[in-house]
Amino acid sequence: MTAPFSWIRPEPWGIHIVPADIWVDPSRAVPRALVTHGHADHARGGHGTTIATPATLAIMELRYNTREGAVAAAYGESVALGGGVSATFIPAGHVLGSSQILLEHAGERVIITGDYKRAPDPTCAPFAVTPCDIFITEATFGLPVFTHPPIGEEIGKLLTARDENPDACILVGAYALGKAQRVIAELRAAGHSDTIWLHGAMEAMCRLYEEHGVALGDLRLVSDAPSKDAMRGAIVIAPPSALNDRWSRRLPDPVTAMASGWMRVRARARQRGVELPLIISDHADWNELTQTIARVNPQETWITHGREEALLRWCELSQRRARALALVGYEDEDD
Image (cartoon, rainbow, N blue to C red):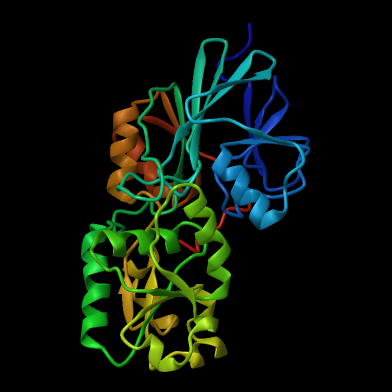
């Protein structure tokens, strides 16, 4: 008799679904892959076949020039993988197109979350709690110190800084996929209708979001500004790497901000020379991680990457079976 859940095997470079010979978010090219979302530590080119949501496939085509072998799976659609295994893509609330993947085989249900968050986000479908036997969760912010404030408070700080510096601009460092679009959409929801200026590296992804129905308002490239004065009193969005780069010299007296869950750690803000840290994360914080595990209530929790030890200990103290997986290739610096 086959041992329970022996059909799903964690390997250092990804999770292998043995009967179907397919991998989830592998860190190296494989013949067949299921991909939870478009960030580079989960998605890559070179797979023979890639199964993902339509938005994730569009992001991968834009970023990694992947088109051949793409198989689209809509949210809620069940895909037969072979070997008696099926996969269903469920919203993860992380970025546009991001998914949890529900795998079913021989009456057993396993969910792989990829990256996720529970806070509302106008740019992507919200996380859906789904019962399962094994819950495979990330733990990027898996320490009790990480509690993310409501995003409205952080957007309020950004708008206040803009009002207090009418002759300058506020330069916000934000990851090009997900974070930048979320910050823009939340600014619009807060009533900020002025032009938002973009670093050139942001434009293509913002346009892709708009093509998928996410309204971002009036966006213009910094390179198209007629003068520095045109950007005084404005908000500028750029990759974190551009905050202290020569590129920023074209801006009018920028006040440097950074949108990241890591801004909770003051030393990180100081290291980056950030004047206005904005604690805005696209990952679940400690409370969301523990509350989600309690809501899903699996037989066992597997922890893929991040602060594994603390979440593992919480599971043990809560009389929940858990194990930490030693996967490689997952990064968290750009949250």
